[in-house]
Every structure is written in structure tokens, then in C-alpha cells.
Image (cartoon, rainbow, N blue to C red):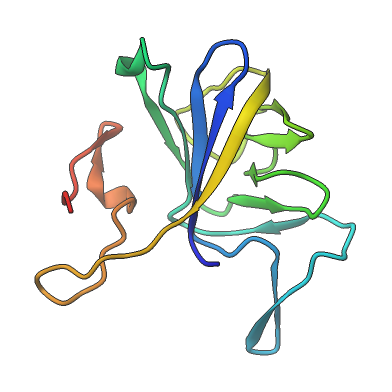
Length: 154
């Protein structure tokens, strides 16, 4: 599938929470090829420098949106076939639409310790060519200043 954005809606606060994952969920590397494997019971931690998590607030209160970028040498993704999308060690940990959050792998973001999810969606990120004929990752940390997006608009 490739890079994805995960959006979750908190059941009680209507807060929109999520993250960006540049790595394929459920893929393993064997020799030089990646292959799909969902039959394992063990957790794998995956590393990516451009992963981030966010809280967009609610529809009524979106002015306090927050972004947290993965710390250097910390796992960005917790890949486990028995869990929902998980970011960091336990920064966002989902099992059966119940999430917990224990800050560890991402900077500058504090989420509610425990929350229930009404629903969640996983979207594939498709990159668009720029006028200079180069691929642009629109969520690259270089496009953020003081947690505000300042990158290109497509």
C-alpha cells in the first residue's frame, strides 16, 4: 500500500487524532524484497524519520491543532497484526477501537491517556509531481514551522 494517513475520531470529545506512516503496514523485508505477512503474533517496531502524529482538535475547536514528529532513533510505527494502527512505542496504541497514549517516541504532543474511537480510516498517500518534475512529500517536517504547515499547496 505504501505511505498512509490514519484518522480517528474520539467517541466522547469528537477530537480528530491520527498520524502519518511512510512505511507499509504489515510488510517484512527478506533479503531485498518486501512481502506481506499477517500471520505473526509478535510486535515489530519500525523506524522512519518523517513519521508524525497529530491532534486536529474538534470541529468546534480546531484552532488548537498539534503535530508531533518522531524523535531521532525512536520507533515510529508499532506493527502488530492483532492491533489497530499504532504509532511509536505507545504514543497511539489501538486495540478494539480503544486507544491509549503514553508519550515516548514523538515530540511536542500530549494526547488523552485513554480514549474510545467511533471510527477510523486509513488513507493511502499518493504523491503529486511538482512543476520542477520532482516528487514532493507534502508532510515532510521541513514544511512545518512552529507546528504550522508552510509547505506547497497542490
